[in-house]
Length: 158
Image 1: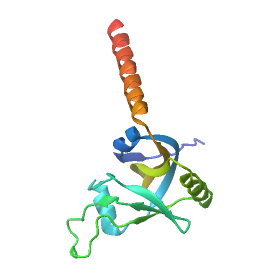
Image 2: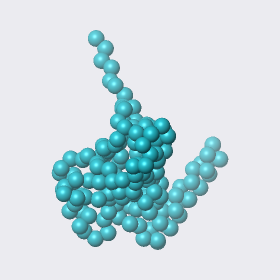
Image 3: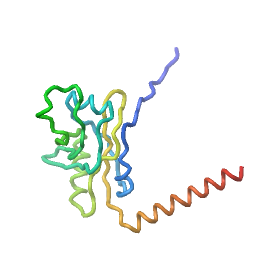
């Protein structure tokens, strides 16, 4: 009898590169998001962005703010549509407790870093992060440039 394992189908839709360059990621979490049917259709067709979006915690629940999902084209009731409404995120209670404690400390915040499909569900990867100072950003850019130069020289030698 042959046992076959199912390979996880993970398909990335959007990575928040600006947040990854501006923040130092401390810890990452995978969350589910509460969406309406027409919002799911828009996300599947990649009509959304994470610019200026952030996570808030109220009454032991996580909410994503300013997560812009454009209106679904075939939606008939377009007058009542709010593209940047707050949406609820689902995460374990112990993780929410940890995040609330950390965000009360100085310099820590919670940011969305990636939106992706896992199997057939839309997931958001959020991160506990700390704002990078300007000299830290410059050091990261310098380090990345040195690594690229090393790769190029090694590729040219062989």
